[in-house]
Amino acid sequence: MHPRLIDIPVHRDSRGALAVVENILSIERAYFLFDIQAGAARGGHAHKALTQLLLVPSGSYSVIIRDDMGGTDTFTMSDPSKGLLVPPGYWREIFGFSSGGVCFVLASHSYDEDDYIRNFEDYVEWKSSH
Image (cartoon, rainbow, N blue to C red; front, side):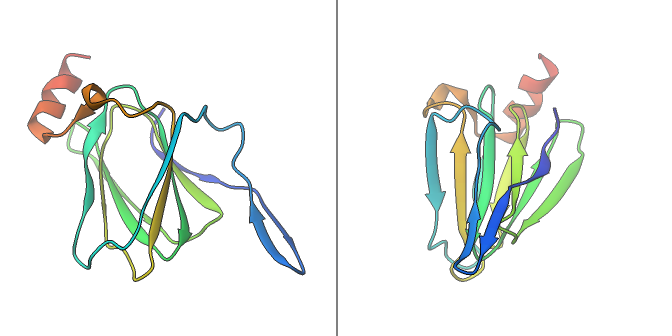
């Protein structure tokens, strides 16, 4: 599976909108990034086993997805009805947060430091052995 944007079902009526995330992945952890200073970046790592769904409930941000072969994709997250599904084995960098931008993440596993690859050269080496 490759990282990709997925549609988040939205139900609208005269009161507003309700977005629903269900049956996309088993969720063991949820967290969000906010109040990110101008020019700051987050991420800068890959996961060995974790799948993530990145959502944007407010504002905007961008995500660069890299693979070990040098390929990159950039996703601009600004639509609450879209989520970025990132399977394990992809390097990600999150940047360009707007004022009030929030990155809400649903994760398939609880936090495990051993699942992280925090150095890109180590990531390329890990990918070449898997």
